[in-house]
Structure formats: structure tokens, C-alpha cells
Image (cartoon, rainbow, N blue to C red; front, side, top):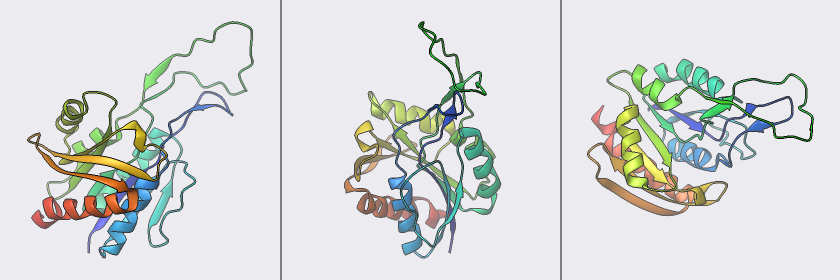
Amino acid sequence: MARILITSGPTREHLDPVRYLSNASSGRMGAALAEAVLRAGHQAVIVSGPVEVGYPPGAQVCRVQTTEEMLAAAQKLFPKCAGLIAAAAPCDFRPRRYASQKLQKKGRPLLLELVETPDVVATLAAQKKPSQWLVAFALETNHGHRRALQKLRRKGCDLIVLNGPESLHSSSTKVEVLGGDGRVLASFRGRKQAVAAKLFSLFCRELMNND
């Protein structure tokens, strides 16, 4: 039995107490992957941003808000896990300044300065042990294969799952799994529960049996 860490959902980076930057990630794929992990007889540990989706009762869930919180929680949990499936969509940017009171309209443009948030996948990949494995997701709007392969190599992933914006907040998805040599190992489409089961079977075959 292996202990598998899954990151899931979006993160939120607040501008003020009521407004934030985020995205439309629903957490459905993370939940579906956790179900697949549990059905295979393994343990699922989820670090989740704010979502409305329910996670399977057998999973351990750690809830976070920001990208920094997601990274900190994952860093704490990852050392005791066999691998990581990074299905979350953490915000890449946050406001440089946080307003402690609600921002008010002043009849002129509001200039918003953004700074990059920590790279969750790259940080964890740099800290993983030789026995551990890491799978990332790449959501791209153009040049998907090239960008996904660049991410895989730059961040130090073992595999990367490419999908598109149509997957966001949807019950269905279309994905391709790329290996480090650039080959497309598999393509799946359909409801996320079915795709997640096929993905985890591929991860087991390509990664877990090699431990």
C-alpha cells in the first residue's frame, strides 16, 4: 500500500478582505484521482484549495487558501508519501500589496501590481527523494505539447498530463500524458472519474512498479 499526495483545486490570492485572484478549477479531477487511489487499495492525502466538490470519505484532506499555504502543506506531507499527483491549479501571481480594508471606487483606473507566487511543483520536485515520483498537470491554451514538455523538464517531473481550458469546472475532460522523452504515452477523454481511473492505472504501470 502506497501513500499518494494529491494537490487539488484553485488557490486564492486576496486583494482586500472580499476580493481575490483565482481561477475556475473545481477540484473534480483531484477528487476523482483520490477515488481511483483509494479503489486501488492505496492511501490518498489531498491538499485542496477552496472547492465545493466533495472528497471521498477515505481520504485525508488538508484545506488551504493561498499558493504559499498549499506549498507549505504539501512540503510537510510529501516526505511521507510515495508520490505526488499535482492536479491543483494554484495562482501563479498575487497582488504585491494587500489592502486591509475593502478597496473603494474612485472614478479612475486602479493599477494592480502582481508578483509571482512560489512554484509548488518545481519546489517539491527539487526536494523529492530518489524513490519518490511526481506527476504534474499542464493546462495550456496554445502550443500545448511544447509548453507541457518544457514544464516537465524545467520542473523535474516524471510525467505530465496536458489538458485545456475546457476542462475547467467541467465534469468531463480530454488529456494526454507525456513522458520525459516527449512521447505521448496515452490519450483519454470522458468523464473525469473514468479518466482519473485510467490515469492512475498508467501512473502505477509507469512509476510505482519501478520503485
